[in-house]
Image 1: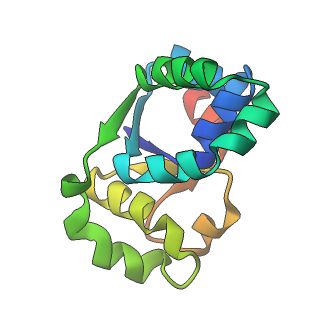
Image 2 (image 1 turned 90 degrees about the vertical axis):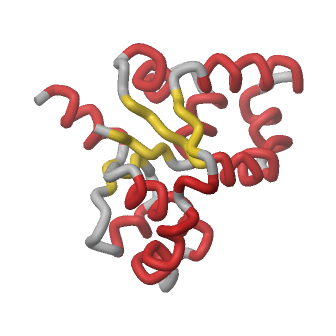
Length: 137
């Protein structure tokens, strides 16, 4: 199963050494992250550094460590799905079109804590508790 991780999940794994980081690194999940969304990560970098109490170097090392467990989706792999994704989520949140497009392109589900994803019914979206429940099955 392909699981597209939302930026908030990756940020949570960077900020805190907790269960989300453990899920990413120790469960062998097929995790994917759109390369386009690295800009959002960069936009929140200062906030992440402050919350996590990390230096730039520590942030980079931790991000590279996490990315060993996450496949990066090239933009050209999802571009043809952007219009359909816009129809699905665009009325709720334009910034999440990329994640919906990735889920369409890779027949995946989205792992996110953002409730607005569940306002649509085309793509399956699970929060962390639901991912855990899925793994227990």
